[in-house]
Amino acid sequence: QRSRSQNIVPCTVSQLLAAEQIDETFRICDVEISQVGAGAVAAGADPRPGRANLPPPPQVTVVGIVRHAEKAPTNILYKVDDMTAAPMDVRQWVDTDEAGGENVVVPPGTYVKVAGHLRSFQNKKSLVAFKIMPLENMNEFTTHILEIVNAHMILRKNLMSASRVPQSFSSTGISDMGGYGGGGSLPVNGLTAHQSQVLNLIKSCHVPEGMSLQDLKLQLHSMSMSTIKQAVEFLSSEGHIYSTVDDDHYKSTDAE
Image 1 (tube, one colour):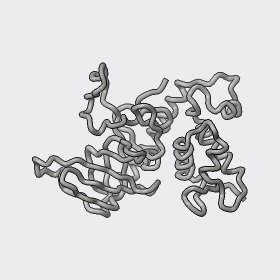
Image 2 (cartoon, helix red, strand yellow):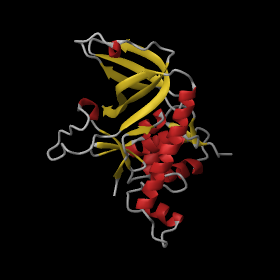
Image 3 (cartoon, one colour):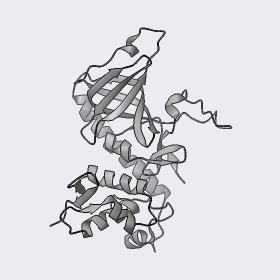
Image 4 (cartoon, one colour):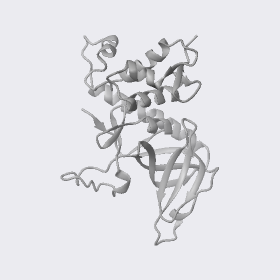
């Protein structure tokens, strides 16, 4: 049983980029954090038949520094960097009929808190922002980091409580089966089964330039390239692996 997070989920950019898109939702650790295309829908107004009375899809928040700002007639495009991954595109739609504060461009170099919905277009994730608020002091940055840790520990705890593994399934058994009950979504030692499989293969590669994404795909027949890339991105952001000659080759940080 997948669950939906409540209201607002504090996240890092790397977590958002690694979020899995399943059907019409984005999920982190099997918990729904945003709906695909939700940024174009008013809160609570789900356009699908029979879904109009559902609670509004959860929002996410990120905190980072504005690296780039570009204003168009109908929107402002920012690149926001929290140093956990490459800067993320954040798009804020503007009301062309009003010259209010929402239409003011936040200048590059400003630390901001962004609240909005995650969306994906042509396999590139971005945020549709409802609110972009410059930080008043850097304590807000520290607070956001602590909120991320707290929120995701709670989400993971709730997930584990809802997905009790029978005693006969050891950690090894889960890995060998490619995941229990969730297609590889159950965390094992902090990693999902998919992430563990990818990491173990990269660890086993002793070639100087490391293992390529193509080699991983050849050995992981049942795993899609998209899933492999998401696992690699997560492992890289968490410091388990690093890129070598290019963005397609990776080695384990534990390699001798």
